[in-house]
Image (cartoon, rainbow, N blue to C red; front, side, top):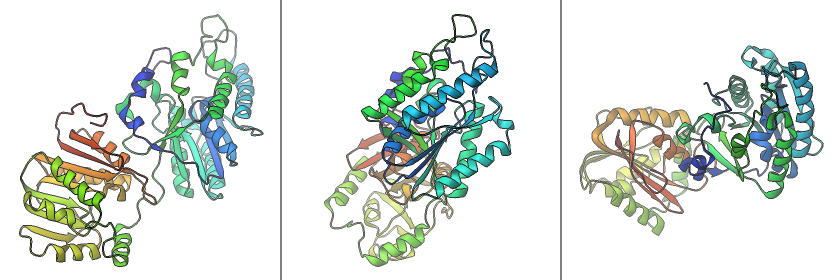
Length: 452
C-alpha cells in the first residue's frame, strides 16, 4: 500500500455517510477488567484507541499501553532533528499523552526500529504474546492493536501479531484503523466485525489533550522544508469523531457446534422460537414472502429450517423445496410437520460443508447466518455463488439485536454479502428488529435506504 499523508485522502463526510459504519454494532465495555493497547508508533494509541483507553480506565479496568517503536523516522528529511532527537521527543510526548488518557499509566516503550517491524521477529512476538497472556488472566481481558490491513507495514505486522496472540490465549482482539481512513473508502471496510464505541465528553476531551501532546506530529517541527506537519487538520478530523471504530476478530474457536446446540434447544422446547404463536414471527414470514421478486421458483434451498414454518410457506411459491438443518431433532420435527407437502424434502445437513448437489434459483438464509463463523460464512457464499442460477435470488433475514455466544451478528452477515462482488443487492428492508435483503447474482447494485 502506498499513500501520501499530505494528500487530502478520503473526505470525512464520506465516512460519516458510510452505511457499514452507521449500522455498526455498539462495542460494549461491560466487564472489561484488563486492557492492553498495542501501538506501532507513539500517537497510534491516541489516534485509534484514545477514547477506549479513557473509558476503560475510568470504568476501573487495569490498562497497559505498549508501543513498539519510538517513531524516530517520522521526519526523514528534517534539517533540524536527527532520528535520535525525535526518539527522545516522541518518548516524552507518548508519556504525556498516555497520562492524559489514563491517570497513572506510563507507556511501555519497546524501542524497536521504526519502519522495520517486519524484521523484528521474536523481539516483537514475545512482548505481544506476554500482553495477550496478561489480558487473558482477567475476567474479560481485551487486546487492542492497529488493524492488520492498515496499509503501513508496522501497523500490519503488529496487528497480525496481535491477532495471532489473542487467538492463542483466548482473548478478544480489537483492531483499530489509522491510515485506512486516509487511503481507503467505505468499500475497504472488512465485511464483518465492525464495532462502534461512543465517546462521552470526558473521553473526547482526554483524547483531544492526548493528540495535542504529540506536538511533533500535529505541528510542524520548524518552518524549514522537511519539518512539515505529519498529521494535518484533514487527517486529525477523522480522529475527532464522537466515536471510535474497531474491527473485532471473531472469538477463538469460531462458532459453537450448531448440531449439539440446537438439538438441545429443540429437545427442551417444542417451539423454541414461538414460530406458530408469535405475531412477530408470523408477520416476519409474511414480509419475507412478500419480498421475493418472483411469484414462482423452480428449486429453493432453505438453510436452517428449524421446525419448518417458513418451509411450508416457501412450498407455496416453489416447485420443490430442500430444507436443511444441522440439528437432527429439528429436521425430524420439520419432516413430520411437512409430511403431506408435495415437493418438500427435509434433510439433516451441516452447511456449508454438506452442501447439496444441483442448482437453485432461490436460497433462503433466515435467522441462521450468525450461527456461522467468518470462515464458514465465506464458504457458504462460495457455495451459493457456485449453485445459484443466473436468474436466482439469495434472501437473507436476520434479527438485528446482539446474538450472544456466537461470532457474528446481522450486520456482519449482511455486510459480508454486500462486500462480495458476485452478488448485487436488489431490495433492502430494515426494521427495528430485523433486516431483510434480497440479492441477485452479479446484479447491479442499486441505491436504497442506506443498505443497498
